[in-house]
Length: 519
Image (cartoon, rainbow, N blue to C red; front, side):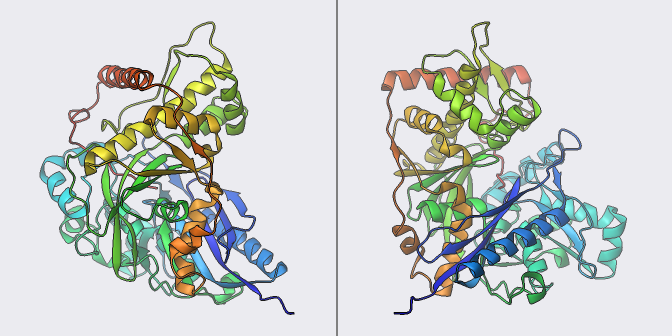
């Protein structure tokens, strides 16, 4: 009997710190991933940048390695899916195909002070239409200023050969040989000018920022028309089946499909995303940093979500290991944390790029406190993971407060989620069970492929792709309600004292101010 040939999707996951690609098979699992790191540069304390050419070359290399695996294992590739970091943007020349600037990463805060001046006039209007306030990032303002002040960009724009977009726009344009200049809805919403009602750019804000309309990509569904890959790029003409922001793709892969279900993904930052339903949710209360987003847009129908994020958890771990040298690696930090089982007075606040929730303070800095001569490296490692867990609680509390109802299920993923200590600490401080999804480190990669695979006929629905996967372990709370309340009260006191001592800007402590998340 001839065995039926397996089918799969080539899935690309373009993160902030690395590029990976793998074949997602028709049983829902992912083949071994090819991976390359991406450089991230910070010329000063406000700017965060990357090289668009490096992103592209990495993408081609890992994609070809994944396709080689498919050929060697007899897997038919039905198409390509892409998940990307959100709100990282760049400009390029459509004739030469070369970037005309460094890519501005979602952690960049160069406009924070200027944007604050526009909050009184714009916050309420933007929250109503786009689900987010002015915030501290403005990709379209950057595009406008580069098109006017960058000599190469200004010349290209005058000659009609300047393009702007986020990482997904860039990759699709390159993969299709310049045939498509588009942006998926979940990436457009992160750019800060997506109108939740119309599904298009919010023209009043675009006009105010001065962004030339001809630079803007066309917004399409996550499984919309992204064209076909140019055979000269990957060696085959394949349909681009789906393109998504990484956190939204993770929601699909981790199993958050119904209203009330949520994911917690630990990547460069930590993101809590809750499904809100088929209409933009009415916030019971405006909570700092909790925003309304498009969870995904498929076949003309939107699923909306609420999101809060802490910008530096995974990047704080890398900073502690690589720049400060306190730990050999993130894995070593997690192993050490298991060794400290007793109480600790050490606290770590991972606000290395400001705070969003429960207080909006882009100027805030990190805190390491409670040290003494008896402090061990294991105790310090435990404090770092506990600080991440408290940040998750802040985000979850904010999402629930905004929507006015509790999250029913919390699925966890991302690199740091492999730590049992972190998962247990989250369950203790939240006071509810926490499920770690198996294969969570490939969640974004698989989620984009599941949506694209439905379009290609691999599954009837995304729920069917997830249904066949084994369930991950559940972590139950182990401390009493009194201990939990005491721990959370101590954390809130640390936050309050630190914000007061830091002396943030005039609106940094207002409870109704917000910040927008990226990737």
